Amino acid sequence: MTRVLRFAGPTAIAVAILVSFAGAQEKISPVSDYQYKKDYAQYEGIKKEADPQKRADMLLAFMKEHPISRMLAYLAADYLECVKPHLQNKNWAKAISMEEDLLKLMPTEKTVQAAAVPEPGAGDFLKNILPPAMKTIQSALLGTYFQAGNLPKAAEIGEAMYAAAPDKTMAASLSDIYLRMQNFDKYLTYGEKVLAEFPMSQAYGTALQMAQVYFQKQQAAKGLDLLSKVMEAFPDKTPPGLKDDAWNAQKAFYWSQKAADVYRQKDYTKAVELFEKVISLTPKTDDSPYYYIGMCKWNSKDPEGAIPYFAKAVVMGKANAAKAKQYLEDLYKARHNDSLDGLDQVLAKAKSELGIS
View 1 (cartoon, rainbow, N blue to C red):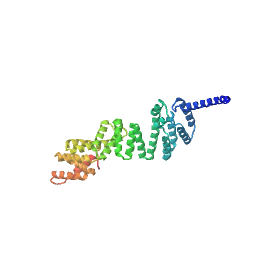
View 2 (view 1 turned 90 degrees about the vertical axis):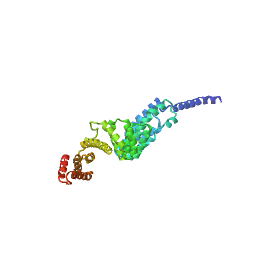
View 3 (view 1 turned 45 degrees about the horizontal axis):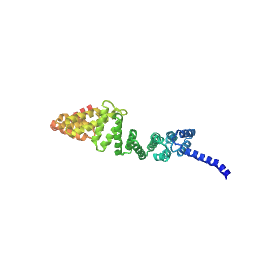
View 4 (view 1 turned 60 degrees about the vertical axis):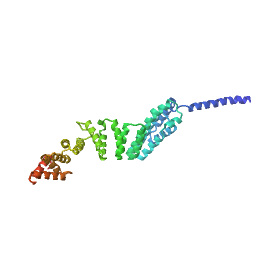
């Protein structure tokens, strides 16, 4: 019996040592320096694989084996590089499938807690390692859905990202997506966030587009307010990226809206001033300012002053031509013994001043 005990004693001790060693191994934190060096060495081996698809598969296998690793950002970035050939070939279905496979393997706070990662390593992982890696993958997936034309899915991902971490760049992306979707309510919501985050000297494009949407929604006051802010940001120059004629058209629209509002208030002197600004910007493209100046003059008991403006509205031959002709003829006949003799000369002069042949 004694011999048996002596023989068994060392074996039991050896087993105990092995169990103790295994237990120590299990307790190694996945975010420890020791594990980081092991993960890094394994990753360096994966990087040697030249075939993008094989390397992508190896990276996914690594992430399944090590769901929590300080190498996470490097793994995600390298994996997305493997997706690029499919993006270049516009194989959106394959690219989306690969990116979604990667996203499914991303750890969560519950994953970290379940792995019993000790502090402060757990906190550092959740704060400094996981969020940027997650953002990189989600941004890539959003971009792929966008390129594939699946705007609702791109918006869904963008909404989730914005809810997790409000960001002015994502607000701008969402505003663009919703504008393309013609979801104008959502567009205005995120457009307002863009205007709150960026100076008007940078956000003027969004402001101009939002103003147009407000006018379409019959909310002219909001549209005019935005146009006014853009005008204040660029009082003496054309905003970058806009051509002079396009900018002049924007200003002319703004002043015509302001003038129309003043005209409705029957402040004819101020209305004439504003309509003249419109004419100075777009002298040959819109007959409205000529017609309304004619109306202002007529309502101000200045028929002689109204005649040349009505004449120009007539010869331009646009939307207000018929109404302008009626007023012009009535005013002219009232001053020429109920005759239209000589009116052709008035019209000829209007053509000459407008450069109409």
